[in-house]
Length: 457
Image (tube, rainbow, N blue to C red; front, side, top):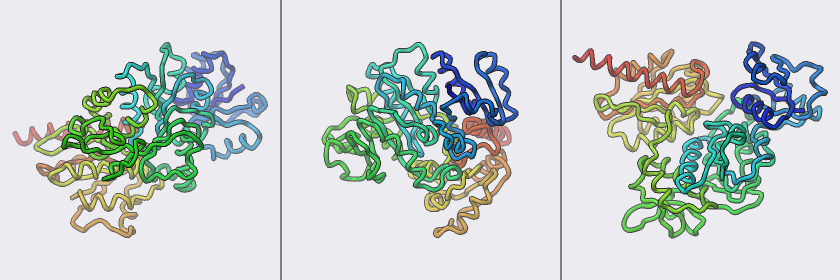
């Protein structure tokens, strides 16, 4: 028998999966206040508990299916593991049952975008594709729905990979590594080890230049991608190619998509496109399908999403920028495209990250930084003690909430400027998730611009 631990989105998908398989299980949530009434009605044959695992359950199960939101290092999880219980996750269950090719995508930033456009490319080529995992549908829900999929494209978090041991993939990638979730990992090496588990059993490892390979690949072929000049040496290298006097993305001597055809321009969009094309290498996909996807893809909500241009000021929602690396990418990408200066709104729950990496792009592109949320003082202090400090010409403001931050940005933004909301932090001090946070930002911007128009009239 299994114990399903954690009854959020993933845990409930595990319950549905076991119910469909006729598999018996127990269900537990660490939150004492968690209301199990609806779940008890949906799964009448499952016993539920909250707060602590009942002592009389300990002899009833051999395997714990752990929610990715619960760390393996939690004392009660470690105790179960030490007592001989197997600790697995939903992706391990998926791996044991899946019968078609899987593409797996992880990384600190960009994984939702690459997962989405990889699924789009396969669908354009005629494949029936299940896209999900850490984005959209849980993997186990895809496995038991009514569709007959030809392939799955999964976004996987480091938390999911921690409890995955037998996933075999047609292709996989770690898009990048930047410091994230340091409140959960002992150090950056521990985090890297969790991420790179995705390469353990892959037929094709897609590796960005700079990640390194030693110890990452157990077997399988390897391709690399980069936008460095003259990077391409062999047909296993993906990058930028000059063809017919214009820049193309491709591999070796094979151009696939002209850069000018891409709807989303910018460095990180080109890197995402290269990763997508490399991940599709094991499949029979004509380059016309890549071009169609990249011509049409407008980006994901809350990911450097243009909310509005008001009085020649761009307001950009990057609420999905929940770590330093994501915000650095957003600053560097938008900074090169913005004629004026950037006003950065950031803050929230810092997850014990090192924020010094933001100093250089802030100095390069910003005229003001507005911090809000729980860890604003920690962020500001880290910049004061960094080797490189923020220029005196850049105004640093600290406010209580996002409403105040938007109001200050509106006062200070000038035509040709960009107001970038890229928190570099988690949202749960003031919001349920990054989606709610991004929606609030968009709502505040809309209200502020309308109010400004009224006052001008």
